[in-house]
Image (cartoon, rainbow, N blue to C red):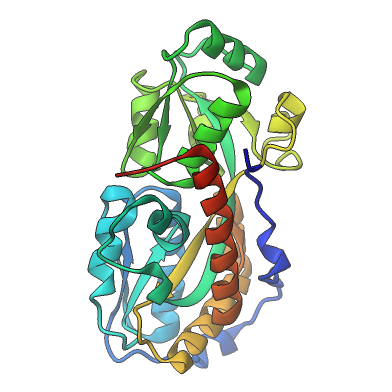
Length: 328
């Protein structure tokens, strides 16, 4: 199977410096909306995408001197919210903030969609986040080896949650069961929050999830992170091994949060928005808050975002095709 790896975003989207910008940042916005800007998030409140966008929206509201309103429209792996957003006017007052699913994956999974993500106008990539393997408190395994042994001893008994069909957590779970030679039951949810709640309640056994949403529950010992799907150990979890260290070589997976505008949005508007967002993501306080969530601020131009999304789409298509994953 095609190895589930992810090139670091900084290869195509340069990481942002951390120098403070002072009062000038608040006085010289590149984009001045005429009314509140509405950001559709096609997943429930409380997840990674929601958390980072709300932090950014607070800064942009002051920057643009207009409210930046976050509107959660979950369902169908992000397709409901993306479909509603696709009908928006391309005047810079409507944005879609989403993880890879609605932007780079779903059109490879579903036979028909009410929107074409390739027509959206990329604005920027807000952040990237590593994935971690997490198990519920009722699962007796406390290491990757123990989890694999448990799964092999009880074929079809372990269940793994995802943020929805076709999400990176879903595809990473598929890869894991194939690489580990275990049979598991996939249970899709409408985002990380509901899945984690059921995991804590003993209804779901495991999940590959973003560190952003999982870390607080792990710290409170309500769930257990067994490994990180990263090349190196995470600074926030120095005692947690990588998947490779734990026994599955070359196993990497992560996710990201992108921001796009409706088809037809003028290039000048997207460019101006991207410049303001890039400056917001340089603010030390926002960097600190993102890092506290396990997220790395990215930023970049619409052109670099478009190139990155195309590359991600091609990569995930290879994974989907090799594993015969479908969502219909």
